[in-house]
Length: 403
Image (cartoon, rainbow, N blue to C red; front, side, top):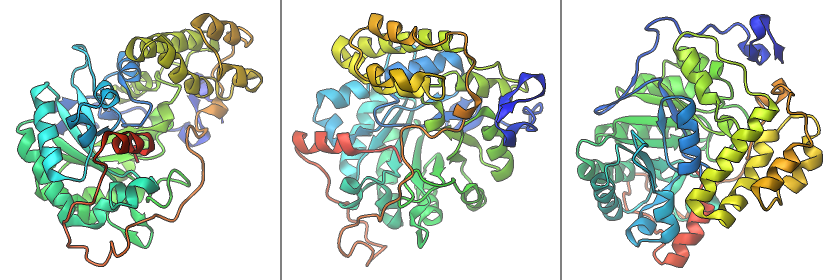
């Protein structure tokens, strides 16, 4: 990977990708919403809180989805659940991802969210975490299309004019692909769009995303299809839409420690070459800004602790960063954060090798855990058992993944 002609910061596979032509792509239509550029920040647990969403939004336009909010936790008034669902008046459109497997809980939660002025609601059918799939929830749900239909129907009924979308994976594993049947069931019950992370639950985040599955889903449905998986560079978004015909892209791990990726996305969709990434000195100022937003949301102590994990993502690939990373994971003040960053060269350009470096998740796979007999009757629409007490809810919320 290298800088190409004209100084393009791109991997070798994206050197010859052209910016969008005039009217090549259309805004993403979700009910009354029109999203331009057709870019969605993926809901990610522990990541897409108000602090990070607001930072990304300042770099570019699109739709910025909250981290996943559990229906039971929200209905029971759990403090952290409520905080993670919070917003401010500048966040328009406001988008919330929910998790639930009980149609009654989901219906009641959606009524409250709509009354608060939420503009878009997504439901997670993609979480691959064993604690969740073992009970028949998360990425296990699409194996039962009638259950998908029942849950989506309850949400759509309560949402009124607010668009409801679903996000799922390809299936349990390569031997049990569920996305076509579940996508059709969601569409028939009024889902405004379907997002597909083009990996199976067994894959977790390993290997390459199967963009061919996104193309197949697009051919199978009449509602918009959103593609998710391996959007590391702005050019990847254009390639995905050109190769699959999908209506929008969902950006996940590629933006961790790189909120300016949304500026680059806005520029290439407008037909322009993107600005070069910031140098390390400018990234330090972005980190300080991000930390302040986290402190405003969670309080000083918790905000600083939350920021520690981000330091590895922001500094990934820079010369000498490994030597200070341990201390960056323990800093206790903004002044200490700045002092540690001053050990590195502020004029260093963004390292090309970091563009496609994996962030946050490893390369392991898993055997998906399901309830005994879960696959015996795919027509069963009985809601799986989920957490009921606040203690159980908090345990689940710590385990939940955006999928």
